[in-house]
Each structure stands twice: as structure tokens, then as C-alpha cells.
Amino acid sequence: MRCDQYIGLNEWSKAKVLATRKVREVGHRIYSDGRAVPFQRKVRVPVARVKVAGRIKGAWTPVVANLHRYTMPDGKVYEEFVQADPWSGGPCYYIALKDGRGEVVPESLWSDQDLANA
Image (cartoon, rainbow, N blue to C red; front, side, top):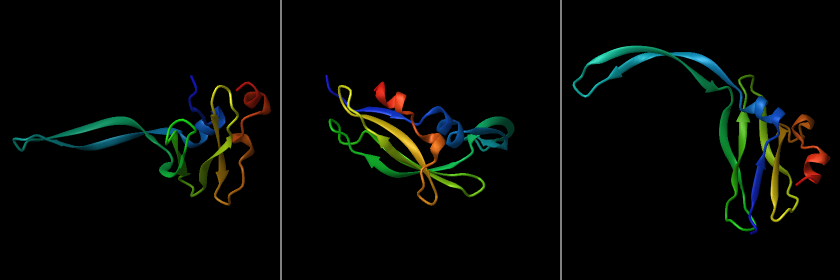
């Protein structure tokens, strides 16, 4: 069976743009009877702001996945692109990152060996 295979980002890229940090949330839970109960909790939130920047149109499905733009707390921007789509029973979409100037981030690239094993 032929299908579009979304491989996604490599481990370095995931650690960079999908990082989270622990924060403390403080607020009030408001019930339907009007009672307000204070709460505090620790949760993990993404470090980067994420927006959809495009879509991957597949050979077998209309949309395989969204491509994202990540804005880091220091203002740096990373944008996903399709590094390669070698066929192995169907296209395999390997995703890498470009920086805010449109230059490829070398650490985000899949190795030739990874691509050859597709």
C-alpha cells in the first residue's frame, strides 16, 4: 500500500523548538454558583510561539502535515521546510529548519545515512 510518510524533525530540532519549561500558574476557578476557589499549579509550557507557516501536499493525501514557524523567547525565528522526500513505498517527508534569514540550520538536517535508510 502506498502512503505519504511524515518523518518530521530530527532529535536536535525537536529539543530546540519543542522545548518546554515549568511555570507556576495562579488563578481562581469560578463555579456556576459563583464560588471562586483559588488555585496554584505547576505546568509545562512551550518555550517557542508556534504558528502554521504552510502545508505539505502529499502524493496520496491532500495534506500530509503543517509546516511551522517557531519564534523563540530571544526573538530568533526558525521555520520548517521539507529537506528531502525520498520514496520508499511512498514519499517520506524529512523536515529540517531554516533560520530567520532563510539559511538552513546545519544541526537540523537529517544525515545522508538517515535519508538512505528511508
